[in-house]
Image 1 (cartoon, rainbow, N blue to C red):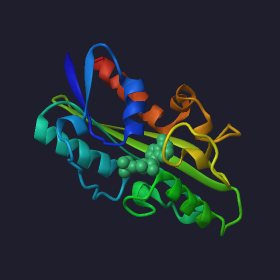
Image 2: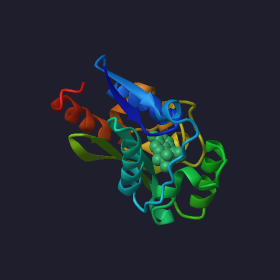
Image 3: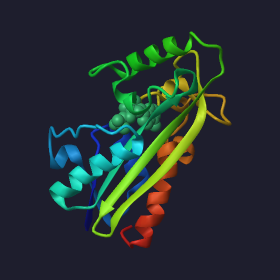
Length: 197
Ligand code: IMP
């Protein structure tokens, strides 16, 4: 069975990637399993650069096809922040709830609506080459956290066309509209082309 490494330690992302790409033909291997404790530094200034940095580091080390995701939330009234710093927005070690509170306080200084978007860049590297796929989800920031599903900023983000937060949607509903879902469906088509899945 073809092994594909998922180059992330974020369990929320791992779950969504497995739900979207999982197939009987491939074995998805977590980075934490194959290289425990290995954190790849995200030194890029864009989502695309960071997903490429992670995928390249893993492919060079293991020479096994790899999927890397870099994603985050860009808020218009904050000049696109937290952007590539989404995971570190309230410092290393802060919880998702703490990051959400920090972001709600930051936008509260502006007049609503707080337009924002999630962006996901997914890089896939194999012996067939390097491919990058992007997905975007437009929406807005709420005034308070709502919902318990998903992860990260989901409790404070209302996707365009919805009246509730991403954290109030089921996993299937989120995957249907999300930035990651959009990027991964493009990857899925490519993996089908390569007969990998
Ligand atoms: P990184 O891509 O591992 O650098 O982290 C991206 C960060 O962006 C995550 O830790 C979350 O805080 C946030 N993020 C990315 N995708 C999502 C999502 O689908 N829902 C909520 N937060 C997300």
